[in-house]
Length: 197
Image (cartoon, rainbow, N blue to C red; front, side, top):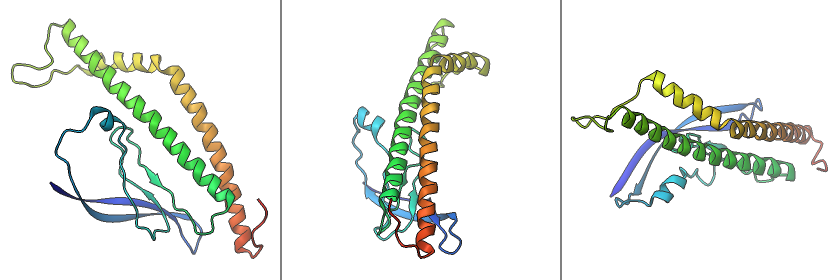
């Protein structure tokens, strides 16, 4: 079956007159052949939303949110005369994005699985089935779910603390590299040529 979709992409780029980052909204239409057969479960869990900018693009492309991690993937623009510092920055940003995507994919899968298990256990303890006689799913109220949320956060405290420490470390390094790259670009624009890295 042929599937057609339309949507919007947010593009982050640098204004060539002011040197500031700007966001642009781009509408797109795409179509592809869609396989109607069932996909393997493992492939569904690890599949990441893919999109492809045009080959002549001069901007970073930000795609639609991934269905598992809820993060928007970014395809970073590779300049023609990319310096070693710019390459290092781009690679670190991509590695950080991949690491972040993997963490939140695993975290969200675990959260959803444990939440379903908790709801089923609570319904079973009350003598209720998962669905009522009309086929509607039974739910728990916010006070009952608050117990699960607190337990989940308590059980994952060390994991979240470790994630936060690593996130700050990576972003501090990225910020320093971005400042260094900005200085190198300013030096080049002022006619200083290409200083040694």
